[in-house]
Image (cartoon, rainbow over all chains, first blue to last red; front, top):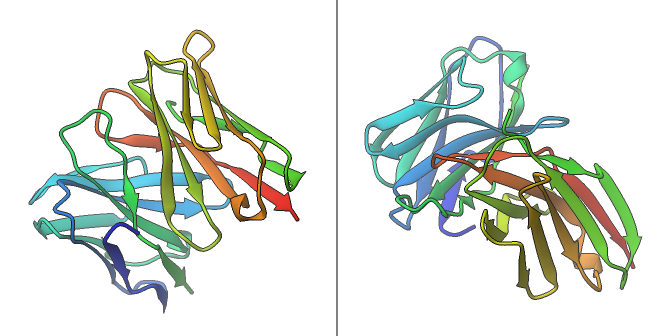
Length: 114
Length: 110
């Protein structure tokens, strides 16, 4: 998984509770991404970061926020979890600065919102 | 939408056969990438083909790109049971973002 870890790997929570997922990388990649994967939808980009404190929205950003205070960490927060946010969440990282970048993925976090 | 669309959605073959997956897209691209995802794991990059390239090889993988038809194909030759996975194409346009398709689920039967 190219030095990318995600925590927790599994989480079950209740509707309305806040949830934070963590992505940690050891390769000093500039760009980091959060995706969600759902049956029939493939991977969809939630938010991404192009540097410390620099983030932008992706395709499905409603209900999610992110923060990046250090190069190696990218946090995804669900302020008030809903059942529609039950999904598998993947973090990815890329070197950046190259229009031929490839992305390296973490192992995923399976989130269930009851 | 810039999203790639893979075809077929699922493919089942016997070990030793070739597997071909296709990806179509709608906008101009900088490059197109293919990724593999084993069950329960993250995606792994396989191969990148630039918009000005027509064919690329990596081991048993062969990727073609036809920008006039806005389509790409991934060929896996002499497939093995270990090739069983989902395969995704990803489009990179004018930004650092990739847009992934929904994937082709490949099953290679021993």
